[in-house]
Amino acid sequence: MPAEAAARIAVFARAPVPGQAKTRLIPRLGAEGAAALARQLIARTLATACAVPEAEVTLWVAGAADHPHVAELARPLGVAVREQQGADLGARMHHAFVATAAPLVLVGTDCPQLAPADLVEATTALAASEVVIQPATDGGYVLIGLDRPRPPLFDSMPWGTPEVLPRTLQRIAALGLRCTLRPPLDDLDTAADLDRAIARGLIAAGDAGGPR
Image (tube, rainbow, N blue to C red; front, top):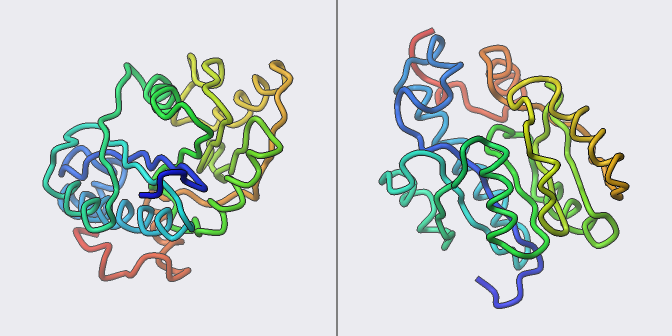
């Protein structure tokens, strides 16, 4: 990784352990199939992040950070692996910003629609804004970038609900922060999301194997 990265990108993921990854898709794919899809999504997101010129990419893992699949995905790309720390998602995200101690774009792995250009433009936006957000069409967000840690944006947030984005924007406004909003993208959480991703060619139907 470069000594002075043009972009710092944190990829947030859950270890692809059957029964613990992409749980909302287990009824469709089975536990093994859902975990396999999770691995594919992590690999895709890491490749997208590593395609950003001179980016310093770190994979932050919830669950078994020492899972062999995690090393298999990160090592070929030279990506450092860190364990998420905190009682809930907000605390874990805040910890990543504190640990990085520099402007950072944090992205999940549930958006196969995400492109390197989205990350480049999000990083560029941090030169003029304290916050950059790429919304998800389900009411959350695909990525958030901050110039420095902003604890109020993560405290007591109803994660996993459509309230995440509007509440985050309300807090940004209350704090008087400059925010750049990027175009919304689709997450992949449900069977309907999976069907849409397959129809768009973002996920190969053969890669989303398992019980139907």
